[in-house]
Image 1: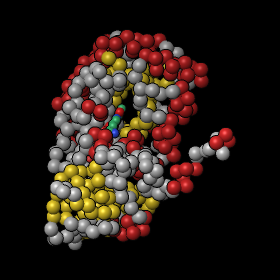
Image 2: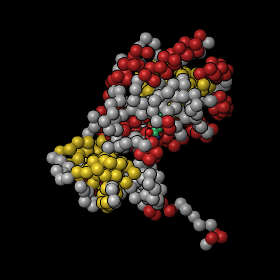
Image 3: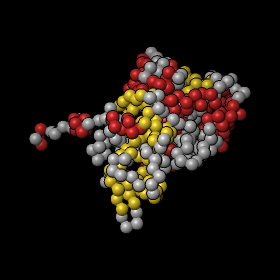
Image 4: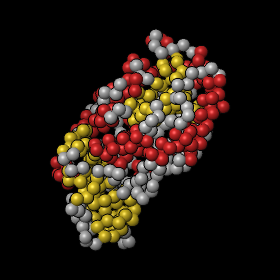
Length: 418
Ligand code: LLP
């Protein structure tokens, strides 16, 4: 459930008409609901109540400092994948101990920054990374607390580009090599083993792959403990899917039941790294209709948001619901909703039922809170859209609209070309 509802035929974000925000900031823009964010965070943490569980919000899903801060205030830690996300977690006030650093390609300077900050855990994904981390940590006289991310070779049954736990994926250490790598970690200076981690993918809509991966993980933890390692924490990843349209993915509560079934009897601390399920349905993109265009057999609705603002439809064939901000009783028909970018892939929806709308009328793209603004670009020299956060009946601009001057400010013409 979210807090984007119609009142008297007008789309509201919490207690504020979306139209009012659009009049103030222009379109397109990202609009987030703080109440929805908090609600989703609570749904997830309630699902884990009674377990020794910690939630590390996956900053990659939406890294606006204001949102990360809002979640930190609810008690969330941060799952980060770069030095940039570390800085964001710090700016948002996440306690360093509540930060987990994931990712296959951490550079030495990023490791150093994490160690300097005193983060709680590094999730190591390869032998080379383990050696590098040991070198950096021992050189600083520091200790890196680590988990090793294992690849359970489980098919999460999601889009190929966001499945991460199959043997062919670049992520994690293969199952057969786990013992060897833990043994190596145990002898390396500057390294302290703390956890085992798995993450099998994103937008996961069935629970079976989780259960399979988690049971395998538990077996491996037994083996590692028999080898003499002290595994206090199990990092269970993120990935729970959300409804983009009519689909009904498992709820956090149902996911929590799987976790309890598998880990209920362990005395381990559990870590979770949800991103999308917290923030996905807490955000929309608001755009204006630029032109209506009728071809021989097709109605096109051209809006002022484009694939540079929200790339998910063209990159993952994702289907986001599109809705008019003002409902009408007038005639409806099917339309292709497209952006202005010079690619046919700049299409948000095909054959989407919409009322007839005039130029300047608003269309909202739903479920855009996760992997929306963070994946935006300036393709076609389109300045990045602003982000606003609604809180009850007020809103704040939490990232201002970029200008065309911003776009070209860092380009320089070499002397020989002047
Ligand atoms: N932990 C790790 C190690 C991850 O790689 C990810 C996501 C997460 C947690 C959070 O997963 P979530 O709960 O948000 O599903 N851009 C794609 C999604 C990429 C996900 C990558 N990893 C999209 O728009 O669908």
